Length: 300
Image (cartoon, rainbow, N blue to C red; front, side, top):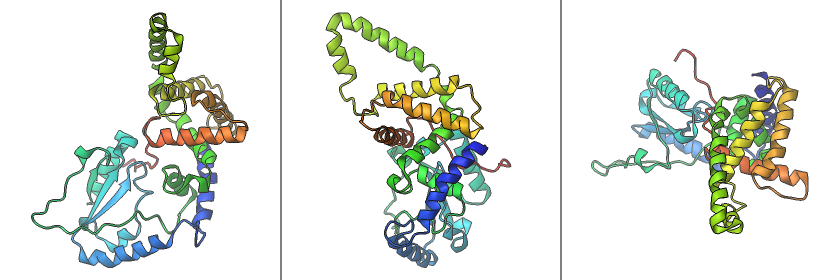
């Protein structure tokens, strides 16, 4: 996918440049350096190391220092945010880690049923640590994935560029095809609303459907966004593997999403940023599908 590689390369280059900065505003802060030293010093003292990774990027989110400092039989790999990752690829990643002799689990931290309590009999002592980013970003694609999944503040990279990268991923995926039946659902909803208008009046219905017009997470707005994206992608006659065509469809998506996301502002720059911020939120909360950005070996 040359087009996607081009998008991730440009975005990743910005991330890697930021990663090379030292001091305030840099990627690798002082507290991360101190935490990493503390972790490595304590590994010989513990019986088991639990590494929590992002299920969307099981390889990219790895803490590389553990590979040399910890044997696989002492390490548990937990893939968090299962609800945001592709189920099929998650299963393949879990199998991949098991083949490497790691103990592996998958969980969604928002689901209490998937989290087990630590017993007090016998006593277990847990040494917790803050989240730690990589000291060095090996390549641009890695940097782009870390940024898109929210490993650093969006404003440091640019919300607009991050949202464009997500749209490139969506446009080349099969995820949008799941939204094909939304039109029928929306038509049924509108028919019900039309019928109800005769009973309670137009103004009451409008207030009911648009009670919080600025909240883009409402179901009817999410449906509008999905339907808008489906229509644009499915009717596009260009070749998405060509970068110019990908640029065209993303531009049309940003324009159309201003209405779907109820964005209104004076300047086009402000409107595009508002669309980008809301779009990234919908992606990161799973409302626009589940994506695993790291691919596992085909041998698994």
